[in-house]
Length: 58
Image (cartoon, rainbow, N blue to C red; front, side):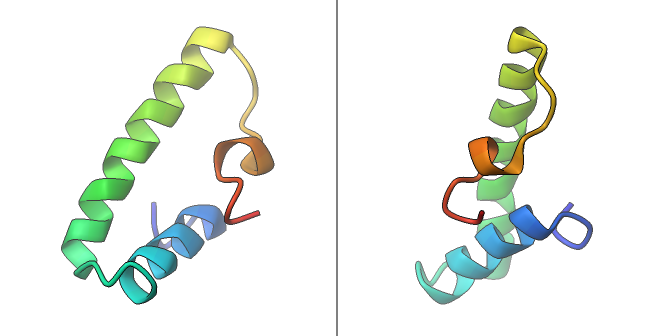
């Protein structure tokens, strides 16, 4: 997911460089974010909107 989605890649870059997380810890944090995103998209039946899902990366 980090390699294919530019929004998730930007969040990973932010976690590693700004928040000084190790790469694996950043990926685990992003797994939680993606899980919450998928649940909310399924509940609301909306389409993926990068500006709404990852506002700091957009």
